[in-house]
Image (cartoon, rainbow, N blue to C red; front, side, top):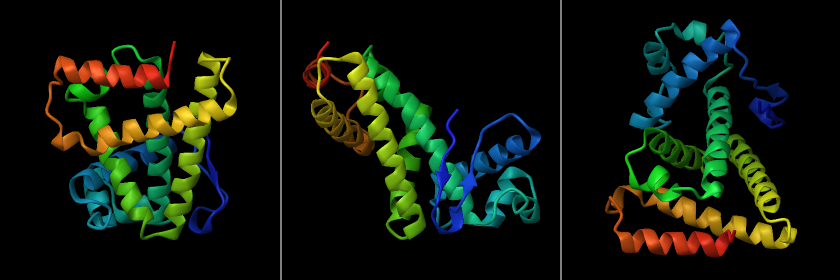
Length: 203
């Protein structure tokens, strides 16, 4: 389980956990409703009223679990981070990664892609969310560096960090170009991407 403690303004000293208590189930219900609204309308057009309607709750009930909209965004950042960590671990295993994650319609990747773009856009306008996103990115990169060093013990930390930078550019570029990429990929495209990945992560 990942537990993030944010020490920034509205998220100060907040600890999020994902246990299976009724309270957490209700929080997840609210997060799921928020996420669906954000995917279709973006953060700015997602009101507390819209979240309440989608979650089949009253606005007052939502405030029992979250202080405000920024509080919900903080929790969504953590949730998206957990998905990134899971995705990254599979990505680094390299087994059929291109087909699994990029060449087929994939609801999970679609969700990660849209939420990441929306969170980044919100971070450009909101100092609190910006600081959380930087913290999220740092955690992801540290974890990716650890995974690479576990897989390739002969690499120095600097070499592992350089590979993480290259992987990040490759993965984020593919995600951002998702709507403009011809799929299914041709054999030539698959060969090229596999060559790129093998050069970054040699066995």
